[in-house]
Length: 28
Image (cartoon, rainbow, N blue to C red; front, side, top):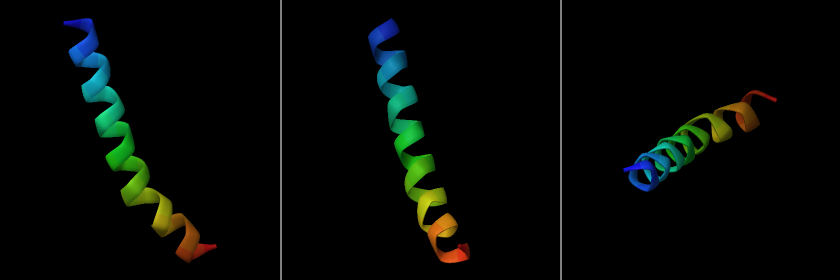
């Protein structure tokens, strides 16, 4: 259970970084 939860967290974090990263690069 913990492994699946950790994997889901990493996946969500990756999606967040992919969505926010480019926006930060374009603004700066």
